[in-house]
Image (cartoon, rainbow, N blue to C red; front, side):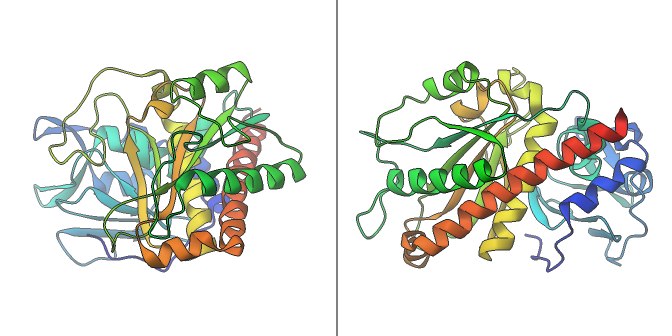
Length: 331
């Protein structure tokens, strides 16, 4: 596992990398049954400077606007202050490190080079999806409180902050009602959503902790939780937005980590129903573990929930403003 890094690079500053060469033109080579790119060539194309690691199994690049750290045989990398999970482990062959070409185009390039996402970008309506509700309680904490309580509370606070910023916001539920999973993407479509943000809290063992943010697994890639790295080639509706999905996830995840100081469990990939079938860029946030006594106590604190909500809203607005700024630059 890569060690956490203290460096948090400004998300908007990262957008300045739009002036650098398109990372997707990096030469590809066939290795281990797939197409891979050499980290040295990637670093050159993205103007990341020299490798600072002095270790054949690691590579670390850092400039005033970008950070990338990878390690052989690992799927987790550090990218501009945030852990991102790749679809395939980093390879060490031929005296250098290699990243799968799909991970370059679907994870690294959108974060290092968001200018590529600016064409026809608009964000007028945000759909917030408070997880669970009604008969579906979600995770149960050690105190007996359940996930559906906190997701609705946080979503309402996010909506209030976004409304203050002049953004139209619609919630998939605004009461303790049962909303089927398949109805949530349909709700987004019916209300003209430009992005979809599903808010959840996690469950696991008593020591599991931290915040993780999910976006849809690209077609042909393995989801993060798949230990066998099985690949599915069938594209889902949400795969139309792969690059914007990961950039939205990055913006929101970075903001929540900065505001809460939580353990960074990374931007992860999954084929959740609410991510598969949605008609716009979409993410799902797991804001902490209710099965961890310390984190549950934090979530039960209204001040903490307000801080988390402010961070989610901030990340959404950073995403919005970055695309608007880049779109003006390409006009």
